[in-house]
Image (tube, rainbow, N blue to C red; front, side, top):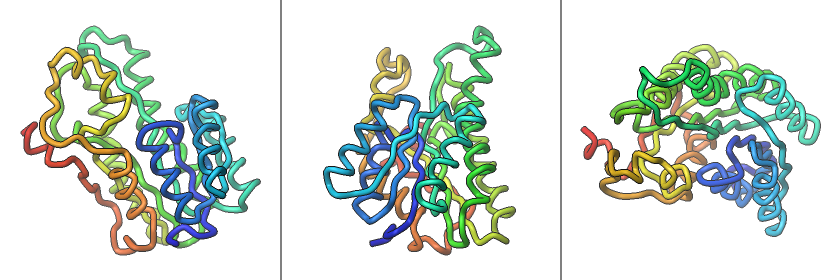
Length: 244
């Protein structure tokens, strides 16, 4: 199994892509740290893993809060000794025109989406052995976007730039870092999007399953992708072709 005796930290692990990733990693032998803003959701993921004889712990976290991120890292290390993989999945969106959005709301999106990637990298890497891997969740919105989601699209574009730069810095530690850019995925985040509900943003083409994204994430987090570093893998069912 690809993650046997490996410790994997997954943010946003209580639902959607994050939950599917936790379950897949656990099936492949990982000790999973399920981190989520909603503790009950994280605990539900842990319960599912434990029911299948897997090993996992739940930790509540606001991923944009440095102290809470460090608490997740400390909990992982205290329980399992080190961290082999980090998946930065947690994210949020806002749906306000750029001239109307409050400054605090703009920076909250940036802090949650981009800041969390920085914080988990900064505080997680010192506890990662050679061969470790980080996978960051970007979005097709980093490449082709729609109106009223500028903070989200900006954060996702920055995540891809962060990934490229961090890959250079982490190479000496033999830690890889890559990104995934999902398209439309059957999660609450997609169907609760007011732009999708109103028809402003058309969901054209295939809609992915969380498990399909988890498969790609697990590939990048595993030794199977040992020659993949600093890149973004678009997993969108061809959606960028429809947006272009």
